[in-house]
Length: 170
Image (cartoon, rainbow, N blue to C red; front, side, top):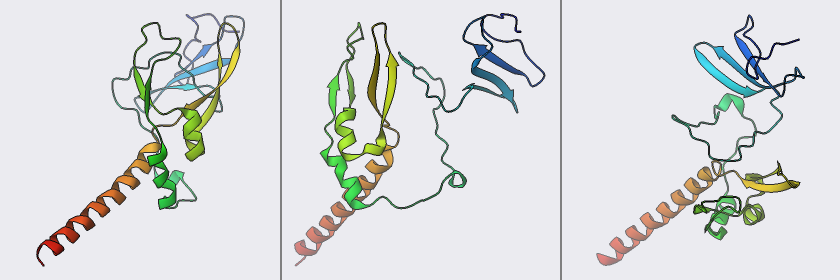
């Protein structure tokens, strides 16, 4: 049994705190631990996604692990893949549940799925009324595709400059 310490378990020998669902259960939802002078807050079960229904403020940097030792099946992004970026239609919108109706900019996940299905995910969101399956966009992984297209466009610009310079001197 665990005493209720404001919704978390007391420190144990490994300097780990587990945040629990309620005082009647001992199932950990979040793990708080300190390893090598770094503090980690992580879901107890790493197979679950984390949904935050409002803003997330980070003083620092959000990073994604990207070391080559973590990857397999590495290949270049093909031109016919990154050319699809020009088919995306960025839009501005506000969220239905946002009382302030703040303007946001983005790409509708439904449209993104047509061209880059691997950059969309379906997540389950529970509201007061029901459980909904909604689409989400992985904007971070759109960046390498944008870089490929920018490099291709820069090559074309450089070739056009050379062509103009060559024909100008004729």
